[in-house]
Every structure is written in C-alpha cells, then in structure tokens.
Image 1 (tube, helix red, strand yellow):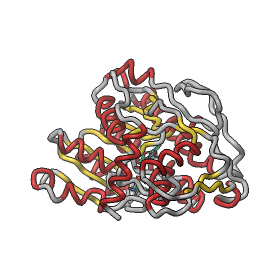
Image 2 (cartoon, rainbow, N blue to C red; image 1 turned 90 degrees about the vertical axis):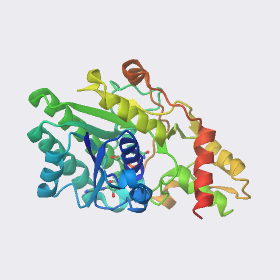
Image 3 (cartoon, rainbow, N blue to C red; image 1 turned 180 degrees about the vertical axis):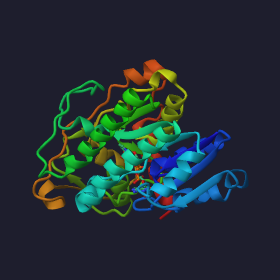
Image 4 (tube, rainbow, N blue to C red; image 1 turned 30 degrees about the vertical axis):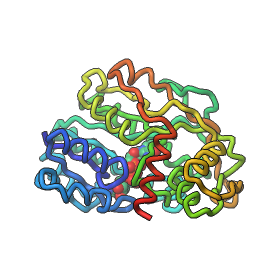
Length: 325
Ligand SMILES: NC(=O)c1ccc[n+]([C@@H]2O[C@H](COP(=O)([O-])OP(=O)(O)OC[C@H]3O[C@@H](n4cnc5c(N)ncnc54)[C@H](O)[C@@H]3O)[C@@H](O)[C@H]2O)c1
C-alpha cells in the first residue's frame, strides 16, 4: 500500500512513517519543515529496506499541483500537517489559520477527487474551556472570544472536523477524525510551548523549571507509540469511518506535579518557578483548567488503550535528551 503522510517530518508524523514502513508499505511524506525537520526521518533514510520505500517532498500542502500528484499516487492519506503549539500559533496567527483551514480543505478536496480514505488529525483543544472530565466526543464546545488568539487553533481544527464530516456525508468520502490529547515522546521539541520536553530540558540543565500559572491545571499525556498504534488500527476499522474519536491517556496529572516528577526522575537540582501567563504569553491569553479524554469510543471500536505510563514517557524523553545533549 502507498501511504501519504502530510507533516511526516514532524514529531508524530515521523513515527507514523516508521510504523507504516515497518508494516511493509511505501511511505510518501510532504512537509514544509516549518516546525518539522528532516532530522526526524534521517534514521529511516539510513535503513536500506526503508530507504527504497520512503519518498520525501519538501513543499506546502497548499501547493495544488504537488498535492494532486501525491494524493493521486497514494492509496490512503494521513493528514498530520498543521501549524501546531500554543507559542507558534500566537506568534503566527494568520499563516496558522490559513494552513489549518485551507490546507485541510485542499487535502479533503483532492482525497475526494481521487476517492482516497483520509484520516484528519484534530485536537483535544476543540473542546475549549470545559472543566469536567472525562471529555466525550459528543460534548458541547466552549471557546473564549476571538481576541484571545489561542482559540483560533481550536476553531480552525473544529472547522476541519466540520469540513471532513461534510465531505463524508455529502460525497461519501471515507474520513476518520481523531482528537489527539497531549502526545509526547522522544524527538518532540519544546520550542513551541510543549510542556514535557521544555521541563525536561530545564531539569537537565538544572535551570528553574518554569510552570505557567499556579500549576493546578491538569492534563493527560499519551506516548507517541500508543497514538501511532491507535491511528493504524482506526485506518483498518470500517466502523470508524465518519466518526470523531478521542485518542489520549487517562492518567490525570497537575502541571505542578508533572514538574516535580520530572525533577525527581532527571535527578535535577532545578527549582520550580511559577510564572504568570501574562509574563509568558500576550495579555489576553487564557488556559484550560482540565483536559482528560473518555476513550470508551475507540476502545469499543478497536480495543485500543494506551500502554505507557507517565513515568515511562518521562523517562524516555529524559533518556533521549541525554543522548542528544
Ligand atoms: N503533539 C500533540 O500533542 C498534538 C495534540 C493534538 C493534536 N495534534 C495534531 O497532530 C498533528 C501533528 O502534530 P505534531 O505534534 O507532530 O507537530 P509537528 O509540528 O511536529 O508536526 C506538524 C508538521 O506539519 C508540518 N507543516 C506545517 N504546515 C505545513 C504546510 N503548510 N505544508 C506542509 N507541512 C506543514 C510541520 O513542518 C511539521 O513537520 C497536527 O495536526 C496537530 O494539530 C498534536
């Protein structure tokens, strides 16, 4: 099978590429390297049996001609390319909206033209400002006003979900939508606001671990390998077509406790420092207090559940950071 992975030089995309190569497929990647890097897939290009089945195009998903060629060639499409990360979205508000709305629309339009099954990567951010747990796919959605730009990412991804569902309903395009909750593992960069790699880097340098806000906000974290397994299973699951599914961990942890845990596991002398959101982001930033998924739907359809504990995830990131100091 020929698998197109948009954003395949990104964090999750590069693991998906490896998995589909391991399963014997040809893998096609398109990535504009805005937040991704060829370093993420260099190890794949160095393995002879993978190298001959891996095709990389450095370009934007907004390029119609390139996308016609790639989607026309491949059998299935996994759409991971997006402007990602709170800091990146706040720094690049307009181009992020264009990539995340027009880019996904382009992917869907061409998948429909060639009738190719497509998986769209959405996000837990679409739920917005809920404080209850767990979050279920049918929950209402609550956002702040458009002056608070962090919501543009959530709103754009929500529009992607509407567009994908509309293609599925009106054109019978086989589409699957996944809402990924914080996904972590080696190779993820802390540059754009991802919390675990940022804390690990600070801990390893014995610098203050900077917790934004009071640290009582909670999250769950999913190991990237578990997310890849879930996506592969869903692509093979007929009942998943036309559905929106959460993919996430269930171990809820406060950001303050996460900082303490990372400090302990990295044997770090770092102090934990609390910084107000105003100091880090623009004045009108707001955070989500709690984000825990219900994974009953994906469990029911595919039997999937996460296998890696938070401790395992943190240790793997520390180990990677030590090896790549
Ligand atoms: N990592 C998470 O915790 C998380 C959580 C929720 C959703 N997601 C979603 O998963 C997907 C992958 O995220 P990630 O964490 O691997 O981030 P990432 O930044 O590593 O990957 C995104 C990739 O898309 C590429 N890209 C961006 N704009 C592009 C364009 N116009 N054309 C071609 N390529 C482009 C980037 O260069 C990058 O390689 C994204 O759609 C993201 O919204 C991730």
